[in-house]
Amino acid sequence: MEAPLLDVRNLVKGFGGVLAVAGASLSLDRGEVLALIGPNGCGKTTLFNLVTGIERPDAGVIRFAGRDITGLPPQRIARLGIGRTFQVPGVFASASVRENLAVAAAAARRPLSEVAPMLAWAGLERWAEEPAGELPHGLQQRLELAMVVLQRPRLLLLDEPTAGWEAGESRAAAIAIRRLALQTGAAVLVVEHDLAFVRALGAEVAVMLRGRIVVRGPYGRVAADPEVRAAYLGSRA
Amino acid sequence: MLADLALVLLDTANRVLTLLLVALGLAVTFGLMGIVNLAHGEFFLLGAYAHVALERLGLGFWWGLLLAPVFVGAAGWILEVVVIRRIQDRPLDSLVATWGVGLAIKQAVVLLFGPASHTVAPPFATTVAIAGTSYPVYRLFVMALALAATGLTILLLLRTPFGLMVRGTVADRGLAAATGLPVRRLDALAFAYGSALAGLAGAATAPLMSVDPQMGVGFLLPAFLSVLVAPASGAFGTVVGAAVVGGSESLAATVVSPVVAQLLVLAGAVLLLRLAAGRRYGRER
Image 1 (cartoon, each protein chain N blue to C red):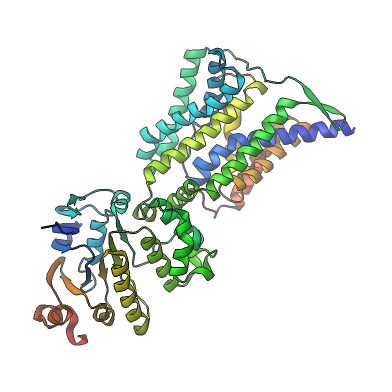
Image 2: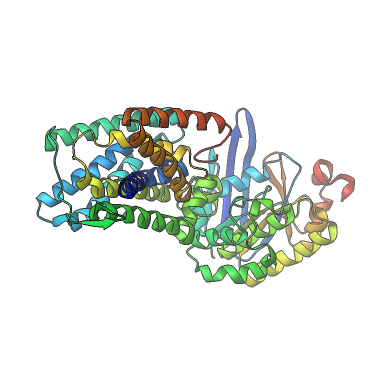
């Protein structure tokens, strides 16, 4: 049997006396889409930071395509094919939209000729020469996603990609992300608070509570889980 | 009268462009990367001595001019990997460390070449008549070289994938790493490039001055000032900075005296820096 694309085992990370991630385990196959939900402070973003090498775990193992990547620096992990977006969009603020895409292309050794089609794909042609830092939040998110997609990652980690969007927009974004996974064959792990988005995504859902993945399954089953209802979904489900 | 004026203007342009050539490397390592490299003057010195050594090996002037920057660039790469990257978040430490490296380079030069001065003969000793005054062709060549190096550096930083990646790394290291940019290699390459420019400046100006262990000292301060007073970081801002510092220094030296000129430049730089106290230089973190 083929090893999962991403295999996280018993990951632990503490800051001071607080365990942000307390033995989290998670696996993701090629082309699979998974939504990761959980209340604020449950460790979702720290988990992303551990997988992408921004933080080093205190314990546990992270394997990507069968290779142990635990503790590798972020640039090496990115070059292995793990792309991510941030809650606050990670764009080079003083560079133009086109230059941002060009940096992403250069980093992934993609030809610069792919920048123009990606501008069109993201609907950013009008703003191509604008400094990225001056774009509205939503457009910065779009640029950030375009930068990651341009690099053709095998695994895409999206951290609250629709934060601050209207409900209609976030449903459209969920559909776009599914299509993206189908088109590129990339696996997608997406952290999101917006449950309308998670439902529209139509993917499996994993719930993180107090630094651990406590349940995983289809949205309906997860939403009915008593521990999840008590801790996170509450009446909003 | 016209000939006198032409000579003053040519000498001023020569001083400005020679200073620009020295400051250009600092514009990369200090202006862009934010590293206070007090050994920059010694990299200039290394360029001149490398030129002397390569000529002694029988390689001739042009090979010396070409290979000296390569040698100094390699020295800069080693300094970045061995010293700078370990202390780049501690400006005071990098100040002391690079000062120490500068002393070591200077003493090594004294041990290898002795304390006396050396000369490098210019490839063309002819002069050309400009507005009634005769001016050495080699000085004009150095001025053209400074402009060409500046143009190439601007093109490299603004128009190539390497320049894009360096600017990305400088703007936001964390994001650059997350995007997959090889930040450490880029640091070393950019620092090596800035050092190579200092080496080029030393090799090119060697025929214009006596090559001795102190030759880097006179250029270090004005070069730093050129980058500091530049209205923008990078090569283009440094052109303006070198014009302000070198131009005012050269004109004041002609009108008053060289000592008064240096005092005036220093006082002007202090005033400018005081007025621009809120500006940020170097890496944004």
